[in-house]
Image (cartoon, rainbow, N blue to C red; front, top):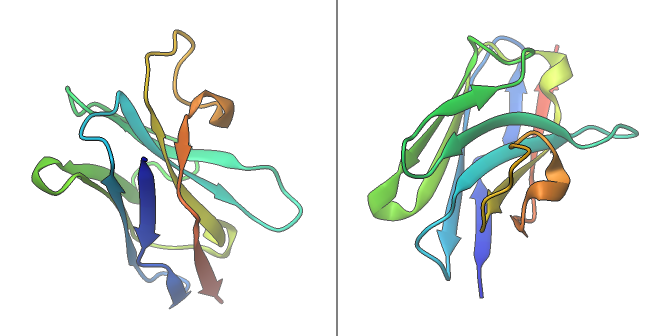
Length: 125
């Protein structure tokens, strides 16, 4: 059984940083791993993704230059380093993984097979 477990959320002041981790178990290979977030009353939105083999990354325009996604292969873990946090970055952050290849890419949450339980990020102004 595949499990994704997020950690690292919390309360931070605007301009501060947080580091989210997603530890995967039950499977040692995924095609893409991504982070999504959801604010109250809003749809879940794409934040960042990384391909498992090549390590290529992709980001939402709203976080480019501030967030970095990386993978620690030995630990089956994906990291999201978030810097210069803004109030708009607040929400529940979810780790997700694609267990097969999807032709249409990585931005659509419906194309992810596995999800974590989410971790809350709160940004105070």
